[in-house]
Image (cartoon, rainbow, N blue to C red; front, side):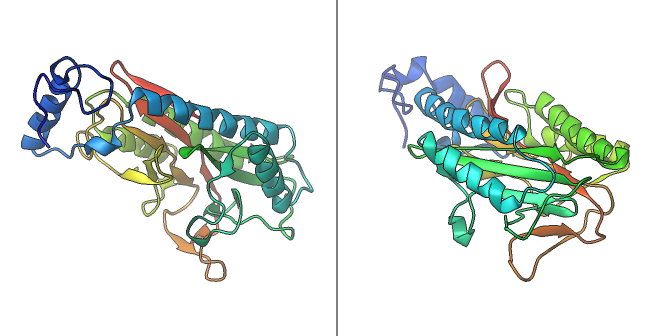
Length: 289
């Protein structure tokens, strides 16, 4: 629907369109005409939405902080799930994974060769030398936050420690490419290049995603991309950077029993860090980590 220059802006701020989003929309249309992929208006987060998403992220971050002091050798992943559920709900949130498309738990706990979507269980006990990704997502008043961290359990080998460290560096290098009016392909290329420079591969089938008003929105964020490609990073776009970096080959398979957990095909370890980011007018902001 076309908005007149003197009409109220579509963002609901109360300003006239010509003084708010007119220049933004003109730039979007110019880029679209050049053949670039541009975000739909519904993907652009508005100031009041961003503040509410940040409140959700505050809970999500605190839950992960609590786990930093509790996760240890001998702990079951079911216990991690219990802590996430109890702490999230205590602070007024809802664990986003719980019952999402049938997922049975409040958090994902992926150990060693498990790439992502590991399902907590009382029978899965953390052992000395394990690495585990804990992927925590929160809903607060209908707004979503999402982040994951790697946890080193006991005496972890230097080989695994390097994988975890380099994966975090991949996220940092990807984040450094989040710039207004840049491209999502710049982010993926930076992640890919750093992983490969260290002898690792990046999972192709699973990636990051838009988030905020829904658990999973557009765009899909892949990490085997080229600079100057994929969606334009318009201010207000929000998404996760969460590469899954494998020590061996990139190939994965899905556990046939639970139909959720992705596992490396060669049985070698995988690591993942996840941050939720916002493209701003002047750069970028980490919303949740």
